[in-house]
Length: 389
Image (cartoon, rainbow, N blue to C red):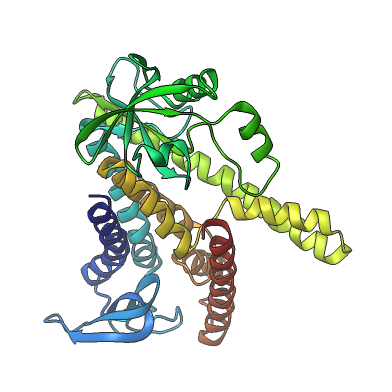
């Protein structure tokens, strides 16, 4: 099941790119700007086909986003039907359309989840008072240590632990703190574990690791747990019909605020890296690198997040996709060269000075921006490989 959910998650992630670019495509055509190509991912091209409307649809190799190529994309182009010939309001609508589509997609997904089961991931997650109830609360195994007590009784990834305690009298487990408290209480003793795996319920006894063994392992590169598992709490809240939209909007606003806080930490970490490189302060550079890398994820990181979410079920997968959609909206409204926000802000600033940007200057700025963006993606991917693999 997890593999199927992961595949669906990857398809939905690609769908976010399509939705984003479809916003640009539709708004451009509605406002008389011709679209020459609709691309999924970045070139080199793997597949091309001309659509009935005259635009080319392309599927490309580099999974770094997507694009819509408009006729006369330079702000200074004046040919009829070109982006450059459109007025400022039309250009603003075209550039903002992708952001709007991702924002709306994120809100809609959160609203659907609020009705069918919204995961609680953020510790202080926004919740409509009096409008929800807990519909599921489980403790799921996400990994099992080799040669651990858990491995000897057949606990596997996706197993759900229901009870743990003295043989014949196990206690209910509804949260990670519950299980942590019980395993510590029964350290070094035989316990009965009741769990569900692949739809079947099992009841087995096993001796937990002792406190001395666990404490000693923490000083090595191979730390051990009393039972020998990593856990995730599966908590789902379902909201009344009237509370679903309110919850979606409130949670969206919370995610936006947290995203900007995380972005601030990333910029602060980047500043420490630069300062450390300039001054030769290795501690400052390493600290900045650690702070910055915690706030971002590249293609590898996104895949790992989707894979981990697939273990917890389709609700978590949809939640991750909703958050990614909102993140795409936020990133694309920022004044980052080569992205939608960068192009929009360049256009607005140039018009404030009374004239459009020259084609050469626009290409230089966007080229530098794209080079920096690709460099960051490569660096983030390297960090992700070290962090997750």
